[in-house]
Image (cartoon, rainbow, N blue to C red; front, side, top):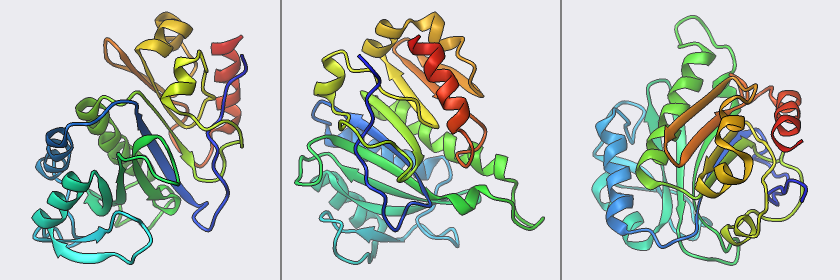
Length: 240
C-alpha cells in the first residue's frame, strides 16, 4: 500500500508550520489540564511580556475572534470543552496551541495542534536567538506534548505543502495505512511494528529519538523551511 497523505488545502496561512497530534481514544480531561499546566511549569507564558494572569483565548468553534481571558479561566474552558486554543510564548518563539478532541464537521479525528509562523525559523538580527535555537524550542514543546498526551500519531510541516490524499485517521492507520514522511513524524507501536524499529532508528534523518518503548520521533532536517528532498529519500528508505 502506498503512503497516505493527510488531506489539507492551501490557505492564507500556508506560511505556518503546523504539527498535528492525533488521538483515537477519549482523552481524560485531567490529562489535558496536566499538559497546559506543565507548559507553564517549563517556562511558557501566555503573554509576550511574561505575564501569566491573562491570555488570548480562541473559542471552541474557531470562528469567533480571540478573547482576552484570565489564564485559569481559559484553561478551564479548554479542558471542560476539550476544544479551544490559546497563544503560548516560550523562550523566543510564539506558538498557537489548538485543541479539538471532539468530532466536528471539519474533522472526525481527535487532535491537538501546535502552530508557529515559519518566519520565526528565519534569520533575525543579532539580538535574537538563532533559527536553530528556535527550532530546538519548538521541538521541546513537541516532545513535552508527546510525552504527556501519548498521541496515536503526529506529523508536521509547512501548512499547505502536504499532498492531497486520504485523511489520516486512527481507522486508516489501523487498516495498515502507512503515512508519508513530513518534517516531523511520530511513529507509535503499530507503525513501529510494521516498519521495524531498527529501520526507523537508522533512517538518514537529522534527528531520530526513541522517546519511549512505543514512541519514535523523526525530524527530517534542522529546519521546516527545507526538507522535502530529504523526506523523499527517507520515505524511499523506509518503505522500499
